[in-house]
Image (cartoon, rainbow, N blue to C red; front, side):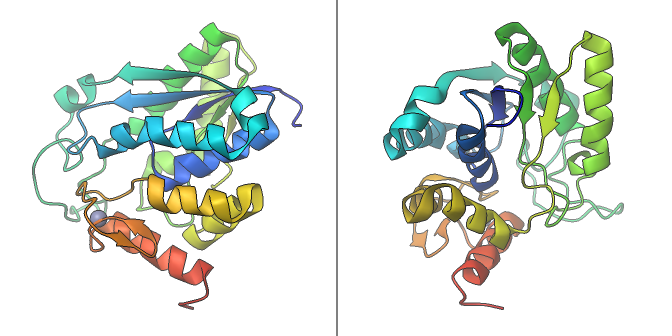
Length: 235
Ligand code: ZN
């Protein structure tokens, strides 16, 4: 067990956040989840969440006992205050500043801040998020320094000692699959492969070796490559 014993996991239903949730279930005595509905173009992620929670409960009796309340928060204000390909029906492309137009400026700052408020109310002392600098699409709010600065700001602003944990920060997608295998063996890998959703286009028609998705959007491409490296099919 890690020193602090209770965690709130930012859980979207994607590969990264599901791996983070499994990591938290392994490391903390009490785990709750939080999800955000912010007018995503495709709400597939939100529909797979309950099935994944069920799958994790079925995976291990210990995890079932630790897993507590799931908090769904309406953050539809995001689509009111920003216009990006994540929330509006426009083509995904790279902008002049080098960031993809799926970038919602400050989204993770907002997510973590809302999560901190819920954690405060629930008496949870750790926030767990799937932010990652290794494979990231250039999102500055996924940076390790951003998260560390936010941890300081939140604790000063709320007079707390909440810790922000980002277990995937220095892992690439292959290593994220490896972490899943380490945490729950092949059954957890299969649950994540078949149950999680990453595709930007919300495509869930065909099951590929790496999971469901269109196979061509940046999120699918990254996920497919990582999985193939994980199973040794690609260098
Ligand atoms: Zn896709």
